[in-house]
Length: 269
Image (cartoon, rainbow, N blue to C red):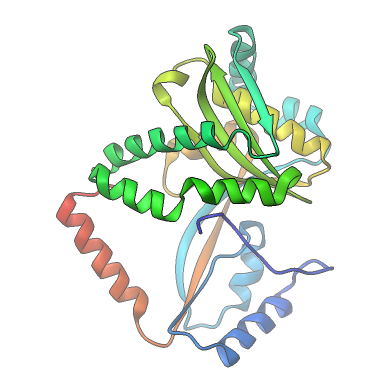
């Protein structure tokens, strides 16, 4: 469903023996051709030690913000000086950030998602029709509406407005930690307004007030721009691995097919 990271449910910190027991149960009792395990990046070393030697491994990179000390500590010690400058610029320019936990802002969020899909397609040299089909099949508007209406206070949508129009938005899932499930924006409308920085400042501050310990920023991939932004707002990089446990070489075949299609349309990751 593309909603981000899952994980084990435990009353104690997850250790190697816990992860190893889960992997052993899956490989012994589950019926599968391929099992995919993408762990919490902060627990990457635990899962790495628990994986059998034959598991296929894919390098991943994600970011998370340590909220220890509260928002004042995050603001002064973890936000970069440039981020604080952009936040101040946005506030002086009249950028408005609205937060909703009842689903009211889903349409504004989804409009920005549609706009972002166009930009992603152009950047990746992907036919727009294919990008829309791929995006809307996995992420229809009703999906976000259902999430928002079901989770209520645990799902917060933030929208930053520039000159009264939605410019950036993010969906944050909140419990003991906060998870940024998806961030979208209209780059032309954002311009040099600092709207994304102010929006993330508001989301991170609210997570601190809610008592969250970490603010997970999600996958960063190989994008230097995404990684730089996440680090500017206090994120720490976590290099970890995703694992595939296979009975047949499904991953190799899937990779070959995807690579072939990408070459055919000159797709750029």
